[in-house]
Image 1 (cartoon, rainbow, N blue to C red):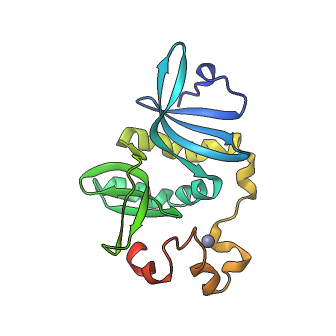
Image 2: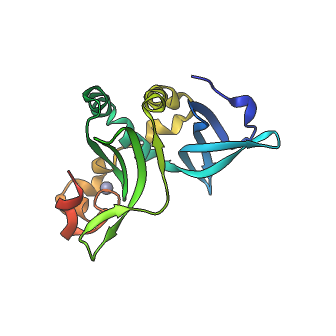
Amino acid sequence: MADSAAIFSRDDQRCQLALGGNVFVVAKVWNGEMKIHIREYEQGRGRWFPMKRGIALTLQRWLELVSNKSRIEEAMERQPGTLRCHLGGNVYAEMDSTYPGLDIRKWYWCGKENTIKPHKHPGIKLNVDQLKQLLNCFIAIPDFVSELSNVVPCYMNQDHMNQFGYFMCSECNPNGLSVWDSTHM
Ligand SMILES: [Zn+2]
């Protein structure tokens, strides 16, 4: 995996790991919060510019994605398997029978149709090769982002020890009590 440090020079960035096809995993601080971006970049005037196609994950959502590593690998082996990983809030990583890669994007609650629907923001769709590189990043990223060792999964928070706290959490249950069953598979 190429670390493309030479093409980025922003000091608020910890790493830029190439997934191929101009998609990078970039850990950087924005508004005082460390986030891990999986994003497309384009080169122009000697530097790389972030594109709209991408997603910025909080460290907790990144950890949630990493915790699904074996599920993702299993789904890749089924070629193409189906998979839905809830990363927190209305962000999901999905693989379906029509697309063997991974689609990571925001969804929103559509009350009229009583279901969640893809947000108009494109998110990022990784092909199989890019997804394999992402799995390598799961191992590499903690070397750049030491803060990850202090992050605990949301469900392990003290106020989640009873079910009510869990249900009231906008990360774990973003669309309220009534829709729990339909969005969590
Ligand atoms: Zn939670």
